[in-house]
Length: 144
Image 1 (cartoon, rainbow, N blue to C red):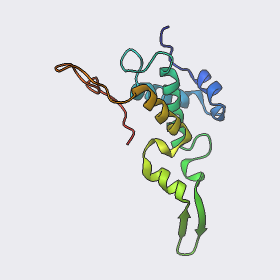
Image 2: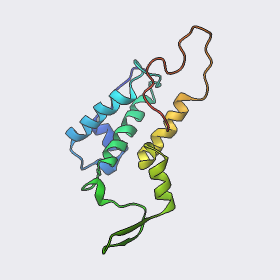
Image 3: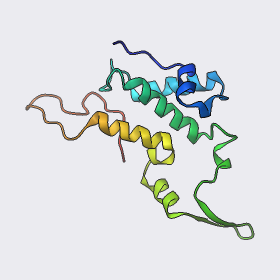
Image 4: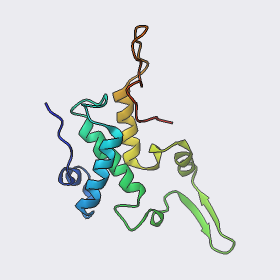
């Protein structure tokens, strides 16, 4: 089975929340995600998993940009209280932990991508002496 790059149409079927997002914007992020995630020809992703990983990474990036919606700052998730005079903002413990725990925890798509990445990469890999080890091919992600 050959790798088939995801299109804006397949992306919108998988993630209908982005149905109103312009195809040009989705295409940009799919292309960027493919460059970051890689394809089966240039990375360790399985042929069946690579398109899903690319779409998840693109959805993660789009969500970080505030799409779908009107902008990243318009969705203040995790705020438990807000005072305007001398500005005081309180965040829930869960929101603070997600913010501090790393890159992928900032969106649900990123969390799903991190799980997929963990499954794809597996655990410790042993090689014989003199054989290039894990990461020598230019591993692209860390789970921080």
